[in-house]
Amino acid sequence: MRFASVYDWVKDKIGDEKIETDLLQHFVDSLFVSPISLYASMAMALLTSGCAYYATEDRIMLWFFLAHIAVGAVRIAIVARYRSMRPNEITRSQILFFDRVFLVAAALYAGLIGWMSAILSRSHDLGMDSLATGLTVGFCIAFITRSSGRLKTLTAQIVLVVAPTIYVHVVEPLHFGGVIAVALIGMMISAIIMGYVANGRIAELFYANQKTRRLAWFDTLSGVQNRYSFSETLDKRLKHANAARRQNFLLAVIDLDRFKEINDTLGHTLGDAVIVRMARRLEQAIGPDDVLARLGGDEFVVIAMRAAEEAESFGLRLVEALAQSLTIDQTAIPTSASVGVAIYPDHGRDSADLMKAADIALYEAKRAGRRSARVFTAEMREKVEQKRILELEMTAAVGLGQFEPWFQPICDFQTGKPVAFEALARWRHPARGVISPMLFIPVAEHSGAIFQIGDQILEKACIAATAWPEHICVQVNLSPVQFRRPDHLLASIRSSLEKSGLQPQRLCLEFTESLLMEDSETTREAVRAIAAMGVKLALDDFGVGYSSLSYIQTYPFSEIKIDKKFVDNIETDATSAAIVAAIRILADRIKVDLVVEGVETERQRQALIDLGVKTGQGFLFGAPAQRAGEAPPPAASAA
Image (cartoon, rainbow, N blue to C red; front, side, top):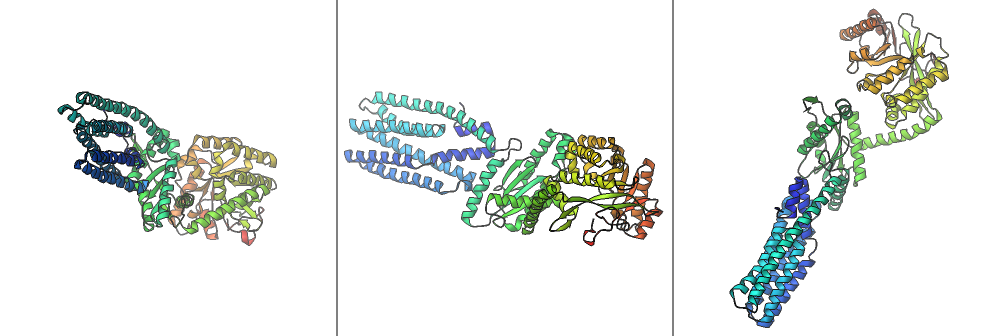
């Protein structure tokens, strides 16, 4: 094998600096694992030199005795210093320093033993010669045992301990000098060959072990630490930080924005390439002492050795690092990320508390519109606690049927009479009273309760509509989350129509363009299936988002609802009036109904009439009420 040591061989095979450093530290750790072998070696050398001095009264043996004490003490001190250092504090340069110092000390010690043996052999005393030969053989065996994985070290030690004695037996007429010289030469060659063979076998085994360890500790796609190794690293940092009693690091959780859309539209191969590129960008954005890991999917985490004052700027730095678009295989891919940052020890002294705080901050960053960073605060925790309580109460409320539709009229501008009622979800809480959907719908969508709540609202709305005149329809809002389970949604619509006996054409289902932006085949099939039942479809809040005309071309809408922001100043804002007029002309041409939301004053109604709009809804015609056409109680007047 052409490699000089297990370390060199495995390093060449793996070729990863992180693994190389870890591998090097493993070998150095093995050298410094225990000073017991050094004590034994030192004791043998001292005993030999002491006996030789007693037998020969040669002063040079006394000097060897003292030299062994000095070199042995230095070696033991080096081991003690290394073992006193914390493993996670040792840098690569320090590891290399200790490795070289140990090798120099080991070579010096082997040279002392070799020359002491040679001088003992020159005494022409059979007993001393035998002692010298035994000492040489004993240390050769010890070196083979200890240094088989380090071929350069092994060769140097064996040559230094054996060559002086061989030299003496060759050049001087000693007892059986020639025989002993040949035997020692054979032993030296055999020892080196044994070390060479052992080195290869150890290298093969260690490579397999390190390869397995890499799979266990590092993410196979991005090459950074995985969830398991990150957990170990975080625990070590926390243990050290708690012992040091100082505030010294940040924990940042990074989530790529809209990564699911990249996977769904461009494929998982490009999605994987994006993950790899993002990992490289993050590595460049963090410091040499920081730790980056991939927790799974599109979520990364960083342990950053920064002060608390740097938390916000560090989070923004990560956001900026991931904000630039990528070009992969000539495909431009817009990328961005949201970041949540927690501070040790302000936001937690253990891994669970810190991760929870960072996750809460990440949630707030996403709520802020993505592509942003947030540092955890106590107010965020309070919001989460309130949300958790709301989720628990919501579970019970679903079982008790506390969710009900309240109805707001959609009226003809000329006559003021209703042509339909929009069913708006309300939660009749036994202690809090009537709760607005703005408070509980986001929680329901996150927890999954939206499916059961949607079923109840739809069924109750259909039952209520059967008591109205046959020309009046009921309109029910659908959450984009409900389309994640299209079979459940379609079954709920069929069940509500069957139980109520309502004609399908009197039911209109509303959804916003946020659902259509996903543009998935599942969504398109579900919408077509709803239309095939005879149920009408309405595009709600038109004009708020991208308002792509392709949505109207692709989906079988029977109604478009213009968002209220175009109505607020329509009597004075020429731009808003022009936009409403253009949408009205479009609706007439493609033969779909047009409804304007948020009509609150008579002047707004008149301005809309002048633009040719026929129907709308808002507080001018009535706020949501428990029953259609009924005046709502004051506490429930907000939509």
